[in-house]
Length: 341
Image 1 (cartoon, helix red, strand yellow):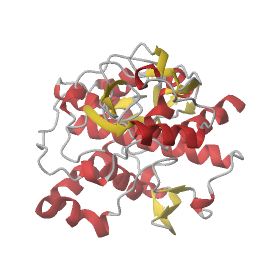
Image 2 (image 1 turned 30 degrees about the horizontal axis):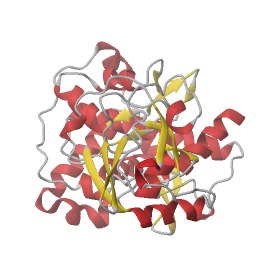
Image 3 (image 1 turned 180 degrees about the vertical axis):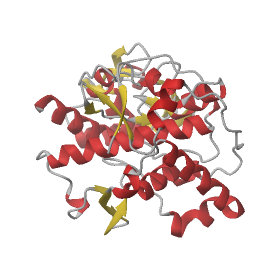
């Protein structure tokens, strides 16, 4: 349990630097609506019968926009999908996201139920709509038209169908719900939890992840003045020394198998790639930096922390004919699907 709590602590700290993949991306109505995938594995067909009603009967307390209310798991998951993944993504990708979101929800609720202190921002609720320590959530009764306009009904039905098709289904490892973290778009490989957060989990390891290039944020550039960057680092690490030439500020970096910066000396202080990412406001910790005049120019690959399910990778695999159970087993190796209820 100590290892698990340490992982959650590190995950929360890292999440503070994550560009939020919320309503802005999910509202991209220009994304094509893909036709349903006719291929469904025999294992999934077996697991889906008879139809369950676990999500509709499970009630949780959600703190959304500062207000606490009771909500069914089914309604909550539809709101999470709306905020976390473009609604026009292929059917099997939406199903994979639904299972990951349901699993992560139960994982967090079990964690807080085991004695881990929930953030004060929860106001006594099980979960909140802050993705830095829970999941993003869109209240579609209020936001659907603003997000999707005339396509609101179609998109909402697609998300509801993905949740209902996977009703009660979660991922487990050693019979426990996993920390089913996800990101917008990894590089060509996902990152391992050990390389990003320093805590090893057997199902959060680096795997091949094609398709990320379809994300508009896959390649990013951030230009920061040298003085602003030095001030941001020294505000948190006052021992950092930027008296030398800017070309010497970054030294002795270590990279992961996926290409992300695990750690690097910045002004003589050893920082994690995630800490540099937060300080400079980068899309990912898979970055390179160069000096241009009085600025530092960072170029990044990927969008998000890069661990677990890559949403654009799920899109790619779904378009390639993979079913949602196959997508999940790829991104969370060694896990099994289990029906709750």
